[in-house]
Image (cartoon, rainbow, N blue to C red; front, side):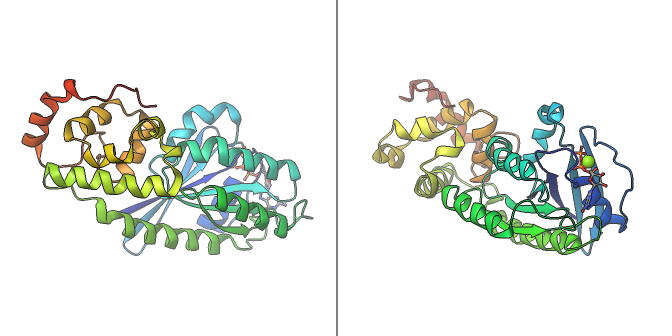
Length: 282
Ligand SMILES: Nc1nc2c(ncn2[C@@H]2O[C@H](COP(=O)(O)OP(=O)(O)OP(=O)(O)O)[C@@H](O)[C@H]2O)c(=O)[nH]1
Ligand SMILES: [Mg+2]
């Protein structure tokens, strides 16, 4: 059965993440606040797939443990309390400092402005204007939609989860075209070049920690890059650039090159000491 991971995250404690989850799963509203310590989760089976919803505690002290949940998620719901302006401001910072840093590029991202049953402190127009500006500046981290929600009344809650699930399913279907290992070393090299051309076009490689590598290479170098250089490069990828490599389909989940052409790789890697790349990639 296919498993889809959805993250329910946000900068603030008490903005209603756990209440949204409870509303969606059990159609209930918890009457007393219980802080989420670290991470909580719930599952829901729908047809031939299983939804795994991770409820990320907003407490700042949990950040270092909770950030890792972003890596394997198909979608992120970034929640804030729309009756509290500070919560809106905190959400913007959180997108920059946490979502963009930890989620793989092209993850489905939506905003939920919870507590819509209370007097709004931020208008829908302002939230939509922020979303438009953000999307112009962040081609790989598009906020697909804004949902005003109320866990208390149940407004827009199941609609949001269902729509997010659908978007995540569509996204997975698109990206799985690159999930098979490539058969030859040459096609691995071609995939690398093609993926990187597309990546450079979309964001100059900024969000992958590989910027230095490409900024210091001419595009001609990219076309002539050898397998040995690719291997050397893969070996130096840090967690963040590794995520990007996996996403681009030339590394597998274990951080190894995503190919069955082991013999060709082995002979190429024996010559990788002589590869002219010297800059250490971030
Ligand atoms: N009026 C109103 N109150 C809500 C709503 N959703 C949650 N609350 C209240 O807000 C408080 C916090 O809710 P939680 O769901 O526990 O918040 P959280 O975001 O999970 O908090 P952390 O686990 O600390 O990150 C509780 O007192 C809830 O009753 C809502 O839609 N409307
Ligand atoms: Mg909670």
